[in-house]
Length: 157
Image (tube, rainbow, N blue to C red; front, side):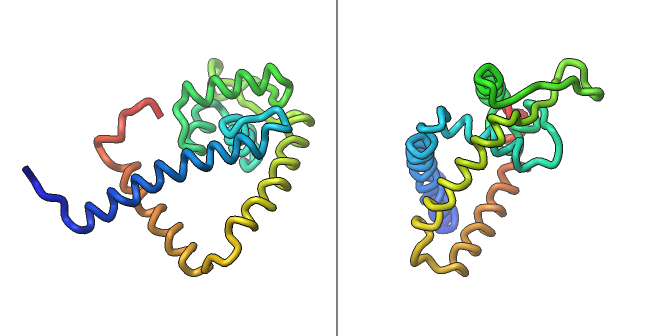
C-alpha cells in the first residue's frame, strides 16, 4: 500500500476541514437568509446572477458557484416561480435561457448582502489579514488543480 506524502496528508486534512466548513457555512447561511424566504443554495444562485455583469444561463450559474447543473436548475426554477428571477430568450442558444434578477430578487440580494456583511465582519474579527489572503491563495491554487484534474473533468458540473 502506498504511503501518503506529508504534503498529501496535509492536503487531506485541509479537504476534510473544507467539508466540515462547507456544512457549517450552509447551515449558518440557511439560518441567515431564512427570514427572506431563501436557502443557502438559492442565495448562491442569486449571487451568481447579481455579481455578473449580464444575465446568466444555468450552466454559467453552476460554473460560477461550483454547483451541478441539475442543482442550479432546481434552484433557478424555484427562484423564478417565487418571483426572484425572470428568464429571457438567449440569442446564442435557444434551449438555454438567460436569467436575471427581478426587482424582488435584487431587493432580496441587497438585504442578504447587508445581513451577510455583519456576519462576515463578526467571523473575521481578530483574524490576521495576511493569513486570510494566504489561505485564499492556497485554496485558489488547489481549486485550479482540481479544475484541471482528469478525475474531476467530465463530471456533471
